[in-house]
Image (cartoon, rainbow, N blue to C red; front, top):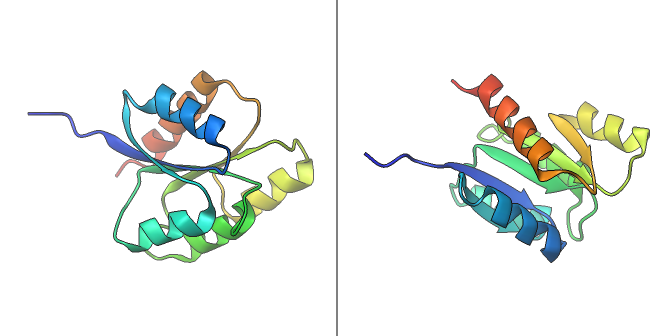
Length: 128
């Protein structure tokens, strides 16, 4: 019986970050990439359910904080693990994202192995 891969939704407007994450996580996850929060919300509203989401803080159309608000307001997706990536190490940004419901916040540049462990820990905690 084939192993069903967990789905990882990457939401980032930086193509290089998306490529790195897609390459790094592609072997272990089904990776879906969207370039902004609105695109990601539309994908989710089509009935798709990721196991975890990694989203950028600064994006056009719908930024990280607005995306967190939308996800956490959704009855269907509010419990999905959500990690924010940001180029800003600002404590106020971290606090805002965590207060809005992000599970974790990682500053760019980041180590993909560290992000992988954070995702694994998140998935282990929310496994039903």
